[in-house]
Length: 208
Image 1 (cartoon, rainbow, N blue to C red):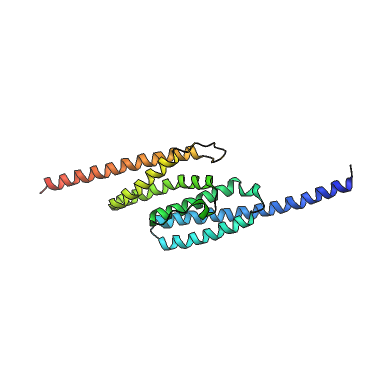
Image 2 (cartoon, helix red, strand yellow; image 1 turned 180 degrees about the vertical axis):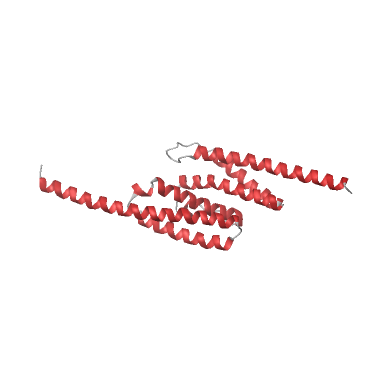
């Protein structure tokens, strides 16, 4: 064995590993920013701060572009759990915004994410859509409730037909179960709303 050659190989590997570690640390920081701002976007939408949400989405898109550029030569980081989790939240924020504002639904290519990341984000968006529907019910905005409920059901029925291993889309089955629960609970809330309104109408008539 040529010790000089071995030392050269190990030295080169050492440099690459230090570089990888540095990229990993930067990736973690950017991923946290993506996660944080995605949650701000969702909160803004629930508060009807649509202009602020739109501006935050622009920031998010820039962060994701930066992240993808940083990781273009590091597949071992690009497909890591912390990166995927932040991008799932990013997709969720974009899709929720599109549904609420009646905008075009962005594709995985538009968002620069993998198909599995997109599907996971789509599944998660059902929870936020449900929260929005409940708020709309309380406001008595039935037309918008029906529109968003139709979207929620469509998301569930489409995702529920996908049968892929957990290794491809981690947690998709459990997310689909939660999505089904959201559909069922919203359906019950809508029935309860109509029933309550009908009873109130009857009582109003009887009190005349």
